[in-house]
Length: 377
Image (cartoon, rainbow, N blue to C red; front, side, top):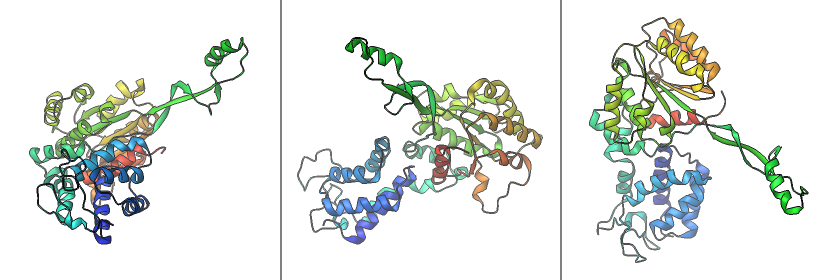
């Protein structure tokens, strides 16, 4: 067996942590299957190890893209397999039988220990930045997190569409298909095909506070929305003293830095005061009740510091809740165990939220993504 028990456990744990951080749930049962697959199949190359990971760590083909991205960052970033064509001494080959992870070579002749592999996985500069509060990051440090943000995926629960698709378990008979088939049997409908409604993801609606107290978190959230997979379909608004729609600007593909610059130019109230209630009222009047929020998953990013009347925040949140499928509030202040929503806008908004998460760092984005994916209230 090419891996010793200790090194194998460490390798699986490090890879599982990287997957979990990217938003892919890998529990102990899947990690155990991955370990057993390595022990039974005795992988000799990175590609063999990749096949083990695909077969044991995910349950749906839709997760392959995320797993592949993390696997490439962890293993293919450490080894160069471009020239590997079956030679066990070539770059990208795993250790031969009887060796351990400590014998792993990076393809340049230097031996790498498990600790060095883990440094490549979680000890890089970007990984160290991932645990830091967004408010402490400079513009350059935030930009360095862009590649890690690309590994994340925004997903919302599905909803039934008005369109139909063929389905053997459908409740409705597909009359058009039945008539087409009947033409082949002399007009007799010998078979009655059925149809069922299609499903598509619910709309993601983002309202991001860009007031002075939230400015560093707003920068990070806008960059996350620009980088993460699945966020390109989101409707994005910012607010401080006024409401600004950024959806079209976010759809233009350039760089995260350029996206942040465009957002700052489009929102003249950037780093201004906070009027949450007025912004919510403007959204409900101009967009929400016209259908944009109906059945959507609403993500509000704000610390809840309201300079206006908190009662207005509560009233507008109640209106929004009647329209939306689910409301998730991101408040970086909730990272403190002593935080309590006792006063101001947050106290008025709290009863109308389905989930409240901190989202104060890249490591804290996992609960946010899970809250968005959750169904129901």
